[in-house]
Image (cartoon, rainbow, N blue to C red; front, top):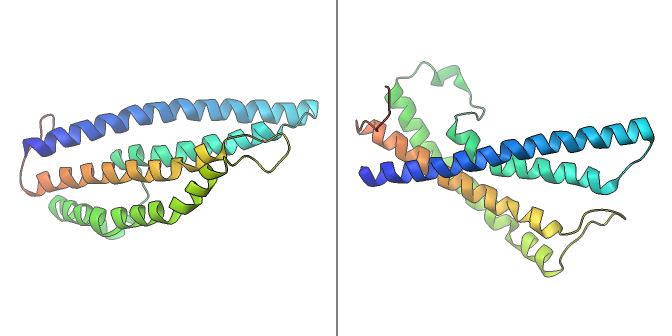
Amino acid sequence: MQFLEKFVNLVDSLSDKIGHLVGWMTTLMVLVVFYDTVMRYAFNQGNVALQELEWHLFSIVFLLGAAYTLKGEGHVRVDILYVNLSKKTRAWIDFLGVFVFLIPFSVMVILATRGFIMNSWAVREVSPDPGGLQAYYIIKSMIPLGFSLLIVQGLSEAAKNFMFIMGYKRQGDKS
């Protein structure tokens, strides 16, 4: 169990660091949107690159922030039945959910986007719009990175639930 606890601590620490970075990227995104909006509506000065940057930042925040959100139990779930179950039953559901839903779906997305991303890198894809951003291939690479981080965090969550099911009390656990 000590190996699992070390794994959980390492992965959770990585997710916290990425979550912190994503928080700053969210702030940057808000500032870019604010600046772009003021320039467009107050000064009639549109900028294609800024508009694309907004979407790119949003994509990075969403993709890289998913693992941190999973760690903080911030994902949407249907709690109608779940809340009435015992902690151990919920731990079993969460444990199995990682292997039945989260990992297979994440692997499917990674595999399904592989060719799409490799083609983008091969041609060094850029924005089709005049004045748009360069290096679309970098933003597209965030897809497998984000889903890989989600898989690793899912394994951490599964390990936490497994340890709880087995009755192992982690250092720092209050319950």
